[in-house]
Length: 132
Image (tube, rainbow, N blue to C red; front, side, top):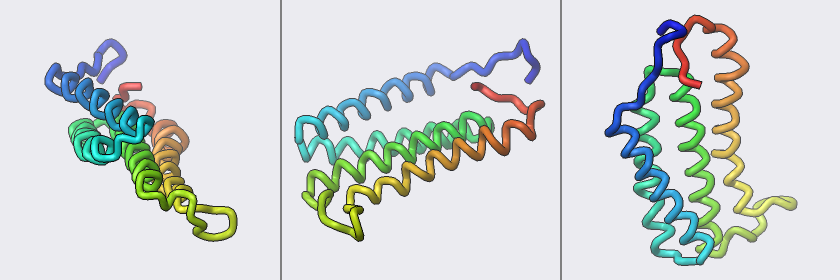
């Protein structure tokens, strides 16, 4: 892909991404309002579409890494929500860490994916197409 070429998101993918945002917002509003059933139900379409978006963009490392980081974020966010809904978020795991802190695992995985892209992959593949 040369400098004048553009990566264009197909309309059906853009519609799916927009729907993904709707599901994500419903999940987080449900979390905020402590609407447990809705919040838990909304995890499924939010996470599923996130994985689908990552799969569909797998040919572009820049998109793949960012979309996998989003999937990790949604996973962490969903776990945190469920831990609060189920009431085990404040239970002590070890030292000052509670079960809520286990959300740091997928959050960290997302950060590592982006670090890989920006620190390792992108500098070594300056000639590769990217969307960012």
